[in-house]
Length: 268
Length: 256
Image (cartoon, rainbow over all chains, first blue to last red; front, side, top):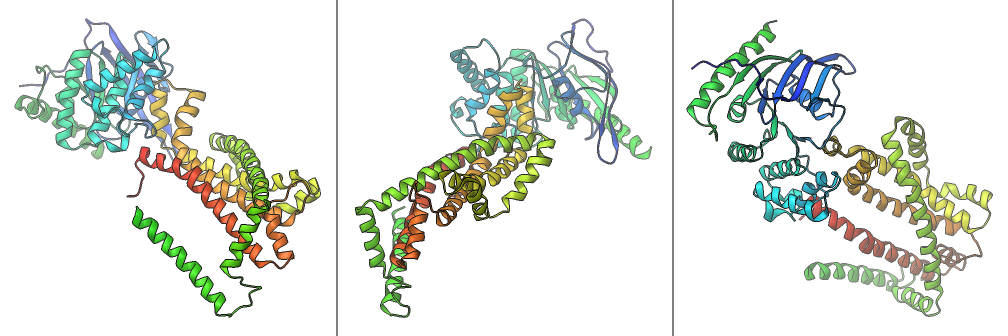
């Protein structure tokens, strides 16, 4: 089976539009060209995975979509409006433990909710509990953050990101620090939640298999400077099992292509 | 828990017993080393005639005002030096320099500026507290993992909200240890000031100590020192320890 290259879904209006986005970072000794002329359209409700080796600018791209960083060149839009800063419609789930240790589990989930106007305290509480239930941690809502395992922490982070009801969820290698078994559980959870709530998800990872398991589309990045190299549609039925043979075929193919780019980089 | 209490009690009983035996052995003159009984007698009589209570009130009031002022000024300044490079290069450097100055060095200046007044004492306490508090606050804010403010920003937190809901709570463990250190410095500064500055507006523990020396009353000197230690311990156990325990439980930094 061949891996098809696809055009981004043109039939649905684009939720996120990135056109000719470039970004440079200035360190004390050199200038890093993090992103080079990246153009990408992501449809409403689409699950897109950005894959590439470390240093390929995929996290930078995610931060730009989140509004945490500004591009040096190019256009970034959400719902047809230029992104000028962070907003409750685009929430980020980080790789590292980003939960606030001075708050309880519930307090963490409430944090983002409290930043939205016009939600009553009762409603906030109800929504926080609903999303904690959704990630299976309602009975831990009064626990302290340090009492949770790594997987549970990331589940809380997911609930925290979902609670303000963003239309776009940006995930920056959220499962990178977890063991394989916990990760597999979370793949199931995230697919279930995505199918129930139809968020637009941009998911950054360096794990090709993970990307194939989760994404409608897998976008391949290469480093120095960070560029989009290829796109792959993953038309597999859901829910997907990361250990399935079909999935392995896609990931083998994508890994092969990826290696080609990395080797070219090394040789060049 | 009871075993720990017993062990601690036993230790202090032994300590006093050793002291008592040393007095009984007549190695040193009783003028230099009074027996624990005569020290206890002094404390008892000073409690009964009210001098100790009055001096403690005077001292603690000065301490609370001076320490309070130090926190009121030091915390915001520490936040400033942590958030602005300009403030770091100016106030930060000043704080770092003055923090190395032992607080008793402020006494001559305070005496010349304010004379023998309450203001002179408060000034010394504030100078003793302020600089270390600025540095502790600055350090606390700088040590916060940047991921916290990023996460908060991504959820729409900005400006003042980020400071009050993220930076301050995240720095709280450092702020608390800074405040604890500030308290210790304030206590030391005040004792130094009270010993050197004789004023008529209030007779503090430091003055009692000073006059104990003038009168060659070693039982008074040791008795007052004992009271000073007890107050320091009591404040630590009642004011700081509960907050520390709460933080340890919340952050999971408790030692088992």
